[in-house]
Amino acid sequence: MGLKSFVDVPRDSHFPLENLPFGVFRPAGGEPARPGVAIGDYVLDLAAIASAGLFDGPVLGNHSQCFLESSLNLFLGMGRPAWKEARLTIQRLLSADEPTLRDNASLRKKALLPMSEVEMLLPVVIGDYTDFFSSYYHAKNCGTMFRGPENAVSQNWYHLPIAYHGRASSVVISGTDVIRPRGQGHPVGNSPPYFGPSQKMDFELEMAAIVGPGNELGRPVGVDEAADRIFGLVLMNDWSARDIQAWEYVPLGPFLGKSFATTISPWIVTLDALEPFVCPAPKQDPPPLPYLAESKHTNYDIHLEVCIKPAGHEHPSIVTKSNFKHLYWTISQQLAHHTINGCNLRPGDMLGTGTISGPDPDSLGCLLELTWNAQNQLTLNGTTRKYLEDGDEVTFTGYCKGNDYNVGFGTCTGKLLPSIP
Image (cartoon, rainbow, N blue to C red; front, side, top):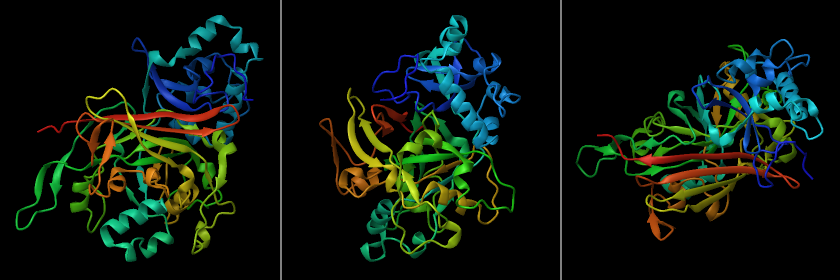
C-alpha cells in the first residue's frame, strides 16, 4: 500500500505522497511566480508554507526564503541536506495523520491550489544546457543508417559520454507550440543547398538531469559524488530538424537543426523519489576509465511513452514505449565526464540524456529510427507519417510503477506549427 495523504490522490495519479516533484507556477490573477510541489491534482504553494514558518528544520529554518523566489535555483544550490529536509517536511505536512495543515482551513485554502487553475513555468533558470548521446541502441541505429553496420558505433563512444553544448535560451515548458524551423539542406546534384522549411521534423525522446550545487572552475566532480550534484529529472523533447542537421553537422556537430526548441516537463522528480526504482545499468565493455568507473553502476526503471496526435485528429497514437534503464552511460557518469576537464556547472544547468531507444522495434526514441530515415512509414489513426507534419502534437509520458502507486513525471507536450516566412 502507498502512503496516505489527507489530499485526495487518484489511484492512477503520477503525484502521490511518495513523489512530491518540484516546479514553479503562477496562480491566476497575475500573482508572482513561485515554487510548488505536486500532490494529486493540486499544487502545494511552498511560499505559503514558508511564510507560515513550517520549514523549521536545522537547514531550512533560517533559509526558507528560497521558496519565495521565482525559480528553484537558490533551493537547488543548497544541496542534498536541504532537499531531504524539505521533502520530509512536505511529506509530513501532507500526511493523513498530521493536523498542522489538514486542520487549518485558511492556510489549507491558501496553500493548496487546483493544478487546473495555475500556469506552470520553467522550474529553473537554465544557465547552460548540454545534450549527451548515451543510448547504445540509438547510437547503433544512427550509425548503421549513415555509416553502415561495420562502423555503426565509433570507437570513442564506448570510452566516453559524447555530448554537445545545446542552446538554453530556446528551452520551453510543456504546452508551448513549436514553429517549424527554416534552414539549409543537402544540395541535389549540382544545385545549391536547399533553403526553406525543414522537411524532416522529428521528436527525440529524452530525459534531462537538473544540476544542483555546482563545482568550482578547475575542480572536477568524482563519479561517486556526482549524484549529490543532481537534484532530479524531467522529461525532454529535443526537437530535431534532421535535414538541417545532416547538412550542417560535419565537422562540428549539431547546431541549427537542434537549437530552435527543446521542450521539458514542468515537474522535477527528485532522485530521492526515484530511489526505490534503482536498477542495474547495462554492462560496459570495455570497462570505463577509472574516473568513470562507478562503485554502483545503476539506472532507474522509468517507463517512457511517446504519442502523436496527427493534425485534424481527435485521438493520439502510441508510437514508442521505451525505458530510462536502457541508457549505457548513466547520469552520474555524464556529470563526472562533463567536469573532468575542470568545467564548472551551476545550479539549474540541464544535462540531456540523448535519445532513449530500446532494443525492440517499438522502443525506438525518434522518427529517424522508427521510419529508418523515411524509408518506412508509420500508421497513425488511419493516416501515415514519415516525419512530423504541421499541426501534429507530440506527448511524452514517464512513470515508475510502485506497489499500488506511481511516481510519475506528468507529460511533456508540444504542437508543431507552420514555418514563418
